[in-house]
Length: 153
Image 1 (cartoon, rainbow, N blue to C red):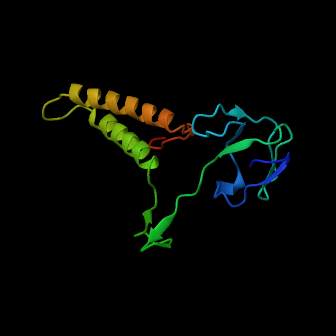
Image 2: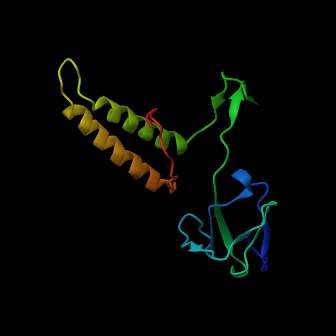
Image 3: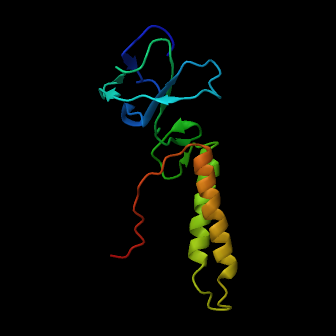
């Protein structure tokens, strides 16, 4: 958005889950990759595709971040079939692979019945845990609190 002061902005076509942004920032710089983004405060989500931005000055560029839905597809068509695949690409693939490797190495750190060696797996776990954090920070992915249920109560 760049132009006169509009306090009400349509975000219904951005593909955000529940039309709900996680953060809204603004900048007056034209080089958007190097811009200093200022967090917008008092953002009011109307949950009908619009947000109100009463504190954002006129003639600003907006940066709206949010989560999108994962899209299950079979042969390029949305599907609910169990054979459907998820449509993800960079940077999600880098983040997902790092987290998957971290979880794999965490499980492999359990004592091996044959050799009892866990040091190599502990080193791998530490590497992938650090790599996951690095990739998450690199692509500005916020941490989502979640609970992993391993089947224990």
